[in-house]
Amino acid sequence: MQSILIQNAKVVNEGTISETDIFIRDGFINKIGNNLSKAHAEIVIDAAGKYLLPGLIDDQVHFREPGLTHKAEIYTEAKAAVAGGITSFMEMPNTVPNTVTVDLLEDKYRIASKNALANYSFFMGATNDNLEELKKVDAKNVCGIKIFMGSSTGNMLVDDEAVLEKIFASTDMLIATHCEKDPMIKANEATYKEKYGDDVPIKFHPLIRSAEACYASSSQAVALAKKHGARLHILHISTAKELELFSNEIPLEKKHITSEACIHHLWFSDADYDEKGTLIKWNPAVKTANDRQAIFEAVLDNRIDVLATDHAPHTQEEKNNPYFKAPSGGPLVQHNLQALLEFYHQGKISLEHIVQKACHNPAILFRIEERGFIREGYWADLVLVDLEVKEKVDKSNILYKCGWSPFEGVEFHSQVTHTIVSGHLAYQHGKFDEKIKGKRLKFLTDKIA
Image (cartoon, rainbow, N blue to C red; front, top):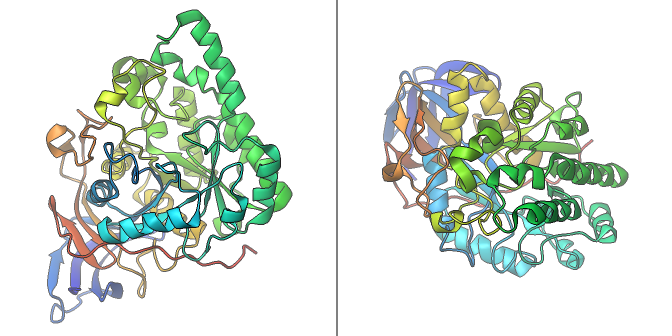
């Protein structure tokens, strides 16, 4: 692996911005300081005027492999993630087959070891009948257990309350949940079907997958976590009401109950359904502008701990269906950082806060070994951005296998120029070096005090 010297970067790290050099050797950050020598560097990057961030850690993606590779593959989506400054991802278990046994879980790790340009981890999926498999998972090598407490594909809806009790009571691993109350959603669907038949307008999606359904499920998950002392991380918060479930008075290192916001719930609102239609159909749904603003405020005041994507591609043909047939989800990893930086340009959030939520906090929350920060002795996961170069999203520069983006037509005011993954310069100025793949994430297993 080639040694790298980054000179004159404005380093955004641990609440400060300072201009310094960084020397990388054997995959790790070897030295941070001013006027470091070029003598031992095989690659020198002059970062004058640019900002250097820790690589983003995306704690929720769906890369569709195995079984759904007409939509996406670990190979294609990890490349898109790297181009977007994401150096590590955690992928979800609703593939085909569902990742609900240790053997199936390890199959995905084998695929990633050969094909993923970014670092990787995979969630083990819970079902109503796989508790014994969950107990076999090695917490040092797997990011967590995923529970769909809302409708999902295959056998992955966990709606047996006795099973939920047992899962929350029997693991020290982080439990990540998708929270929507399925019976409430089905009742809402029936109401709108009675009125509109099968051609329900997309604008009713946030009323069918309602704020009440989200809160009922999230509050149930929080109650279970409190009862059993479990580590609970609620994914993709979409409502203002749910925010009362989370605290900003406890340091993240000591929190047992945490939450995540995704870029689409910060960018879009229900006013965008008329233009975007099913392209912005997600579960949980994009809701009101008031919900969006409340979520943003919770990111800023630390009730919400992590920023992520819930990248979940489908083909454009699949999305161009009527409401009930169009799948939920969309591709986001390539443009997530650019969208967050757009909020910075708008004066809504600082660079330091973006780094805290998208880089530091995922590492702290998941207890990832030696990543998420720019520190000597840590893996060199780094992204260099130019805040003065515009880039418009269109078909010609989209890297997702599905070939489309909900951000098409948007002109961002920042650009990712270089991405370094575990000390390897994997991406620079639109070109990839794929000779070295990403690494499997490792996790600390000490209990929270």
